[in-house]
Structures are given as structure tokens and as C-alpha cells.
Length: 217
Ligand code: PRP
Image 1 (tube, helix red, strand yellow):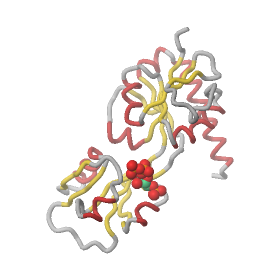
Image 2 (cartoon, rainbow, N blue to C red):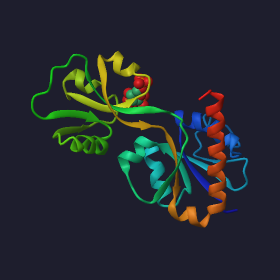
Image 3 (cartoon, helix red, strand yellow):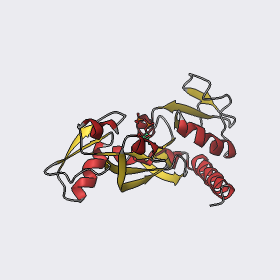
Image 4 (tube, rainbow, N blue to C red):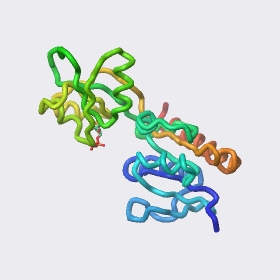
């Protein structure tokens, strides 16, 4: 049977936080996703399947229509851009901030600021808006290391609890964006599968509302 709906998800923390919402929305996977190396999972909803991938790839599957709907972080959406999808719902999960940070008590930087980050597009846009010329250095992780070792003056990175910054002698400076998990929908699928997609989105919306009131917010 052709799947009615394909949902793209990211493994790891995002899956852990999104699964309770999917369960409440009636699309729980039929088997445990974390205990398995499989990449495709049937769900208890007939014809609805979940596929898992890296967060950067969710938009690739959604934009090309291989997934009808995906869940990924706002950081990924801001960094990658793209126009083949609609951002339909803020799930409020995996909430954190995208921030600039620098070593504690660092003297003002003379000349061109060197900024290390995984988010080169967001970083270029952010400093361009301030008419500040920066040298953006692309890294793939452990970004906090760069200013300590002298590779960069500042970083742009995800800050959740602030523990990683503090452990490395860095202080947060400015918030660039509030980040959380978002539901994105392929534009063509939104038309062709309107009923099933809008039904799922509204059930997810209700699940988010319930989890907010359960947390007392
Ligand atoms: C993320 C982020 C920070 C850290 C922030 O890293 O890049 O390093 O979490 O969390 P905190 O404010 O609660 O300390 P991740 O663990 O995803 O690893 P990475 O450095 O390889 O991206």
C-alpha cells in the first residue's frame, strides 16, 4: 500500500521530545525508535510512516516531496532557508537560543572580528545587519573551543542551559534567535493531502497545548 503520509524526523533528543506529542496525535511508531537502527517506521495510524535522518536533511526530503511533513529545529530553517515548504507549527520542544558568546573579560577586538560557528549563513546575515565586517570561520562542532585556543574572537552557537559556555570560560552576549522544533510541510502535499495534513497539524497543536498546560505555562 502506498503510504498516505510520510513524516521526517531527527533521531536523538528531538525524537525523544516529539514522540509524546506524536503519540497524543495518534501517530505513535509501532516499535521503539531509539532501540533500533532502522530508518523507516510504521505507525499505529494506517498508512502513516516515520523516516529518520539528520536535522539538516529533513528539509531536503520535505522540499523534494519525499516526506510530506517534517520536524526540525528553527536553527536549521534559518541557516538553510529554502522555499519549498511551509513552516506550520512551533512545537515548543528542544527550546534554546542562538547566541553570540566570547571569552569572559575579553578586551574589545580591534579590526575584523573572527567568528567561529556551524551557522555561517545566520552569522553573516546577523553581522551584516549591524554593518559589521566579520571573518566567519565554519566549524562542525565543539565551537566553544575556538576562542579559547585563539582561532576566533567570538562564537555563534546554540545555548540551552549555558553549561557548555560556562565550562569553557565563555559568556553569552546577544541573542540572535529563539530556537525550537518546528513542523514543516511540503507545499504540494499541503494541497494534495490537505485533509490528512491539516488534521495531523491540528492534533499536534492540541498536544502542544496540553503539554504547556501540564507544565503550568
Ligand atoms: C550544543 C551546542 C552547545 C551546547 C549547548 O552542542 O552546540 O555546544 O549544546 O548546550 P548547553 O547550553 O546546555 O550547555 P551539542 O551537544 O549538540 O554538540 P556539538 O558541539 O557537537 O554541536
